[in-house]
Amino acid sequence: RLLTIDEAAERLSITPRQVNTLIRSGRLPWVNVSLKAGSSKPRKRIAESDLFRFIEQRRVTQQAVAPRKYRRHVRQSQA
Image 1: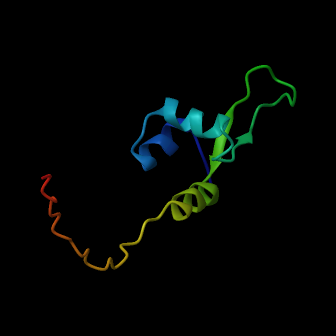
Image 2: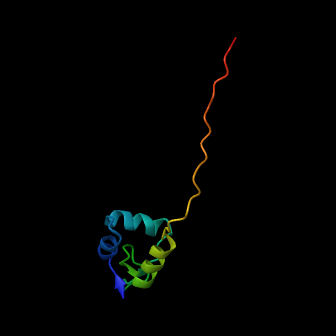
Image 3: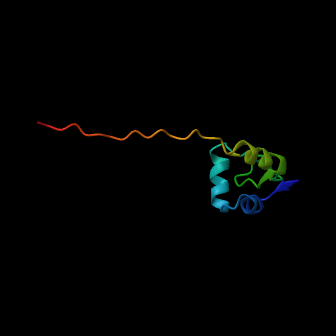
């Protein structure tokens, strides 16, 4: 299924302008569905599979972090 910019923005919980920024930067692939191949104003659509891939690439998993060892900072007296 091909999604419009607005539909993709809604699924990502961002604005359509931010989706266009992702497209322009090359981070989110898109498809031109214009009738004319060399159209000056392309009709952009995003494949649902590409959107899922984009989301999966940015998935963050909680990693176990070792507790920090704090050292008490002791000032040396200046005599």
